[in-house]
Length: 525
Ligand code: SF4
Ligand code: SF4
Image 1: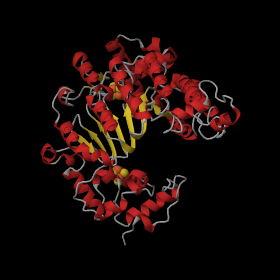
Image 2: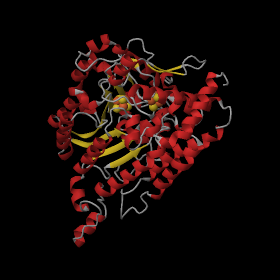
Image 3: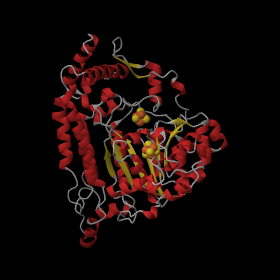
Image 4: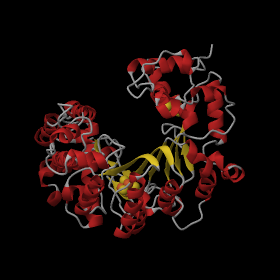
């Protein structure tokens, strides 16, 4: 028999909502499976749209599919209700498992909990369960979690990115040709630039884009249903649609909305000021529930600039601190952890720690002590009383996320030499572990959170364990190091840089990679 939300005994959290606990994950499975073994609320509530290319997927795991133009011409809601998605939803409520969700099926077939349960348990999905279960799967749904990129226009050409996401990469490949590694060997690899027509990858900012046209037709009803709205890119601050979205919420508040914007924080001053002006309004009134900025940097100083051509690291730091000083906006640093992050990641941690001490609030206890005693308990920076006044929507306004880079594979940190791991990587995790929030009531949020340490621990252990395979003749190590060697030389040729001047501590590793290249040339692989 099909179960309803009320048929399940949920663990309830301090906010009186269904908590995200382990037992509740099992209960979500029980609930969903009562409709069908492939039933997942994310298919009906969460979407990632790539409007520059007209692709979409729900959720982000299945391979994106093209949104048919004839469908959005008739009905703009087809952006989230393509015939493809309707068919997948139909399968889900009739006991089938749509093949595009194989990411979850592989996990479940191994008797592990998949994202079907975790995502369906999210508040933006679970509360819609009964409504979705009773609905016709062929009807139009509105997402409660929408992630969108409007184009690939970007002012950076980060070394691990490419022309699909960055127009600067398009220019680069047109000017200086494709990035081909290990050319004239049996292992040639086109790292970038294999696409036939670089110009047709994405609509440009100044071109009519029927997907964006449909988006704004759909939006006046769609925005009312949103709990999470996240704009990614390209570089969102170069897209007028980002400012249009911010203006929309100033004029049409949605107090349930968690609004996030990704930015490299490197746009010209005029655009930056335009963004800050709107962010100030949105974060200070009751227009939305909370505003979060996600930004990226993967190393420190000139090393970071080498990894992200276009970055002015000093300007990045200033703007980062400007956002933190504003108070009610959370800013999260995304470190795409790669082989070139290893030697300076600790410097990045030290800086993050300094900012947390200077700007994070402590609304539970220290603010109260200040009221009772009249002292300023905070050091350094403003008193907790003043910080707490500014920061209403977020308990902490700084975070760090460390997703592990797997592609392109030659930048994967697991190919690092044992010296780099011992001298730089392991001290950096020790540093983080020595600076986690231990005492919850005194310096709350003034150090790294346990979940941040957990994530970095997984990264470090993965690298340390994989380094056991770094043995003479290991094919993966040989090929990836040989490719790394070609790649940094290609970057230096393109940008007039000198890898070893920026990364002198990688000299030994670079020489190992050079030897590996020779092995490939000698067909010794
Ligand atoms: S079943 Fe898995 S892949 Fe499919 S929509 Fe749900 S979470 Fe995403
Ligand atoms: S800023 Fe983002 S979109 Fe632009 S090149 Fe870097 S990773 Fe790609």
